[in-house]
Image (cartoon, rainbow, N blue to C red; front, side, top):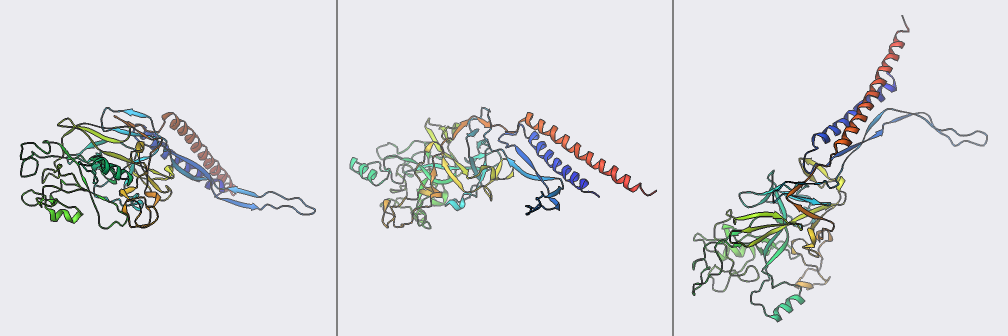
Amino acid sequence: MTGAMYAAIGGLKTHMANLNVIGNNIANVNTNAYKAQRMTFQESLYTTSRSGSDGGVSAGGNNPSQVGYGSSIGSIDLNMAAGTYSPTGFGLDCMIDGEGFFMVGDKDMVINGAEDFTKPKLSRMGDFWKDPEGYICDRRGNVLYGFATVYNPDYNANATEADIAAAVAAGKNITDKLIVSTQLVPLRLPVAADVPTKENGGLKDDGSTNWQTGDPVYQMLGTPTKDANGSRLNVSLADPKYYDEKGKLDPSKLDQVGGTVNADGSGNKIAEPYLNSLEVPKPNMRDEVIGIKNLQVSEQGAVIGTCENGQTVVIGYAAIASVDSPDGVTHIGGPYYQAMEGSGDVHISGVGGVLTGKFLNNKITLTGAAGGAGGATNSTPPPIEESIGQGKGIKIRNAGLEASTADVATEFSNMILTQRGYQANTRIVTVTDSMLEELVNMKR
């Protein structure tokens, strides 16, 4: 066998691998959010028949003499550039106009810090819908993660101007009943409030009501006991585990998540700073979500809808993940990628700066000394990796999906070149075979 035969065989294998890449691109030319691949060739090993020299006093030098042994796969890269907008008319369909990924995964993932950022799957496919339990999911059953709308734990319905001024000086918001949590959680529709009665605290003695039937009931913020940096967890008051057998809120069960109740011990009201006393959900309605229509995603990534009583509901904001090297993410099947070796660190953003200057899990930016801002006793500031970015240069386009980045004209051109390259390598095989035949036929 000669070296030319081995070089040609190597060329055949490499061109076949390139054809596989081209075939996959053409097969996915209409696959939404598909990222086209590109394969590069590289030279294979060389043998040196004569090494080079610099020359001496009386003789000149010479160049090295080397013979190569074909080609091999250099790299197979992803084209992570944004595709074109493809309208669909579905309200929850959306695409990321710019760099970044949606974060999707199972409902029970816990993301406490930057070390957990690699848990969710990354996806450019925004084909979302509302499942029967009220979760915003993609069409493959993975839940969309983001920053949920929750009750403000510092809200004070009776705040005076002095209270508001003091709160502003302390960096607190006590005027907005609803805020956006900085914890990454599965986005889910709020539950619906029950018919107000005296038993559940909704009907006052004068006949007026504390809430209307069907009003949206959001999550509240509870205080975890395991986080030393002052983070808060989201706790849903619609969870039946916080209620007794008669359907009343059980103070002892709520205390397990750091909550408190009013001094009268009625169990129907929750004292500040966890939830305003007027918003009490219907007991045992964990899976009965509020009826919402016209669900859509805004340019800032907000999931918005209209509930039955006409109120506009902002469920939350989709989180956008970015990595240091977008081309280095690992494709794990379908529209999903994973931030593994080669992608660098993962960073979390809210589109449009909705959470600018915030840290994951409501961690407080400390002053560097014990007892600093917010009454914190831990002088260690949160890691910068857990800051929530502004999402500059990114916006969400709704009622459509991202088109494939595979270009048919480019792929067909590459296919012709690959076919001719493969054909040329087969000629080397046949010519080498003819030469070997002549060699064998010398002895006759």
